[in-house]
Image 1 (tube, rainbow, N blue to C red):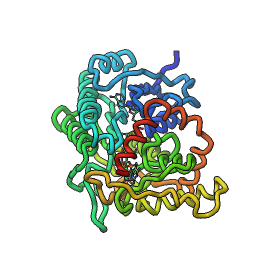
Image 2: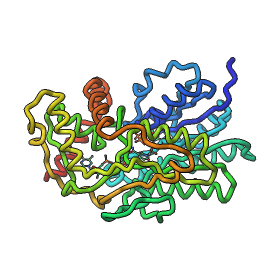
Image 3: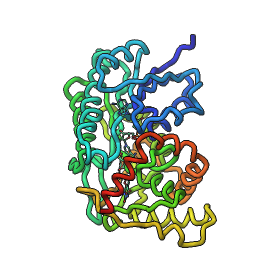
Image 4: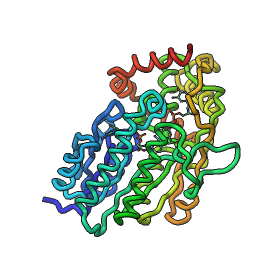
Length: 355
Ligand code: NAD
Ligand code: DAU
């Protein structure tokens, strides 16, 4: 049997970002065994990995990170040497209607995972526990400024509060027990395989289906968008060359108001769907705002760029077009992933926003 040099537990590997991380590890590091541990919630989908799931260095385990016994067994069965932790409830709107799922998965689940690593690794030789987090822990910016690694935490949604809490636990396990941890906080990702409740795939799919395009509030909220494969690359770099106990911000200096972004997608898709110019814009609807909606996020990734040499690889216009092409070519994926209760859930939420 092949000797692997690392046995990496990737949690949430069947989700959007996790599937890109798993693919990158399997492809670039055949000497590592990748154990993808995922509960397969509505957001997790093994189809996301169907192009690589026969790799000899890939293992999938269905499981819940809140289950301490199962985690302990997986660490021991697979001789886990490192963790890249992405599993989480990730959608802000869902955290507003149901915060407890976020406390369980994001806070309790992270602490259970920390416990499993601490117990199995003992005196921590060359292990890495890498926790993937979000820029939302820093709160909301005014017109000026960028989030830095030293920006004080100010989470304002149940989602960001749960992620901030998990970040604090990860740091606490480093300071209290010496667990070799590192954390990164990234801005909004976009690209293939993103569940179509998030802004970019939602707008693309609604345009395709000629459904209304919900824009929250005045549409002037700003997000800083990063190509998901650039995030996966940053995770690779931080995993291999980052320092224990450190935090790294990840972002692409790519700020867009939501309404400008929605307009841009309308134009791209008028062209790709051969609709007369201006057709898709008629679908835009300003609807009631998200409660507590953060106004602006923007990341300063200087530390990651200067210390570890990472930079984004692709311009937004190109990434957006590739993303649109992927969704147009993968309507089967979209139909399958939304086939359960999702469409009904979405229609109910949308009706509430319009009323
Ligand atoms: P996602 O919702 O697409 O995927 C989450 C995955 O975690 C799914 O496969 C799901 O099945 C799994 N999961 C959820 N609860 C679980 C549990 N209790 N046990 C095991 N598996 C569980 O999320 P994403 O957008 O890929 O985000 C991944 C991580 O990156 C999250 O930690 C998120 O906070 C963080 N992040 C996301 C973004 C973004 O723009 N999407 C930006 C910065 C950070
Ligand atoms: O910043 C990183 C975060 O980005 C991640 O930690 C989260 O997991 C991820 O979901 C994302 O959070 P956002 O809330 O910024 O993403 P979302 O796609 O839900 O919304 C982007 C913006 O678009 C936000 O200002 C709300 C707005 N929006 C969203 C939806 C779904 C709309 O105007 N209409 C919509 O229908």
